[in-house]
Image (cartoon, rainbow, N blue to C red; front, top):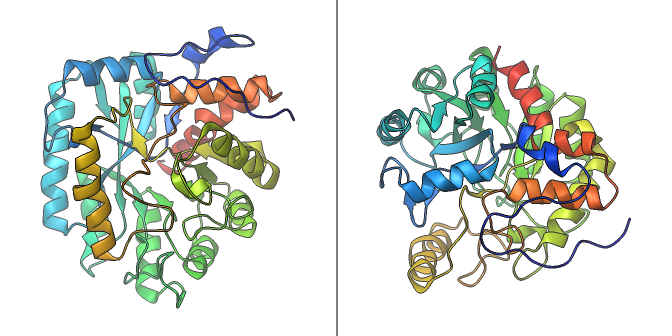
Amino acid sequence: MPSAVTGPQTSGVAQPQGQGADVFPTMTVIDGKCFLREGAGYVGPEVPVSESFAAAVKASGLTTICTTVGGSRAFAETAIFIEKTDGAIGSRPDLLLKVQAADDLEEAKRSGRLGVIYDVQGTSELGGDSERVPALAKLGVRVFQMTYNKAALVGDGCLESRNAGLSEFGRNVISLIEAEKCLLDLSHAGKRTTAEAIAAATRPCAITHAGCNSINQHPRNVDDSEIRAVAEKGGVFGIYFMSYLRREGQCHREDVIAHVEHAIDIAGEDHVSIGTDGDVGALILDETYREHWRTKVVEPRVRAGIAAPNEGADIFNYVPEYNVPNRLQLLGKDLVSRGHKLSRVEKIIGGNLLRVLKEVFV
């Protein structure tokens, strides 16, 4: 295939041009990891739904996102975060819809609202009590990630050198996740934990946001064998817009495309998705944000021992060429320009994840 498209788009709302451009707004577009966040604040828990955020949602073309309501927090803190996020969604019923069942995915598309699926990034929220899986599900959590980089009671994360596998507690947690009709997410998990969790799963599972080790070796990326195993289980492997896609420096459009195309080669077009690990709106790299990123994100991650290679104060969680709300439509346009059929692109930017979520949620 030809080289990646050039000519970065870094502001405004870009409109897909060329083959199939008119149909992008009709597609189901799902970001498997996207934050309800504006600037440095989380919408709901910290800031109200602003008109600028609403404008970004409307311009994004997104049908649904999976957003984190628990990130290495205790159960009580997560419950409070969920309550505040519920309040934010409830304050704009014209704009946002909390997704709790398969029918909500279709309703979000039909009504033109942004569907919001709650996820937790790890199982620290359980506090060693597996019965908190149904408790969190009752609060609206529909996607459960097992680990976040370091060791957990369920198994090891990707930064644990010992690479211990799935624990008996972890097996019980997986059973409860599936019993509650929630999605099992193995992003951030260690290799043995990932392999053993996929083997233990009886329903489709996912790695919602990662990259391919065959393109760039990195603890947060996964091997081809793991990508195949997820696909064989009927699940999806999602590519993120993170610096981990390359050896050093800021991630760019060509990195995203390289990982997407490799994942298609390994898993097939029915099992690849996108989880940007970013925000709905464009990232504004002003001095205020740069200071926030350095002092509130990078330095605390280093102190906590959860920072991964190719993180830094001058490396941000975005792709400059896709720094617009409708970034997934732009990716779709780029894939079409490289010879991918529109039907394949539609699967990758939303259709595949929609299929898996609908199957798991019922």
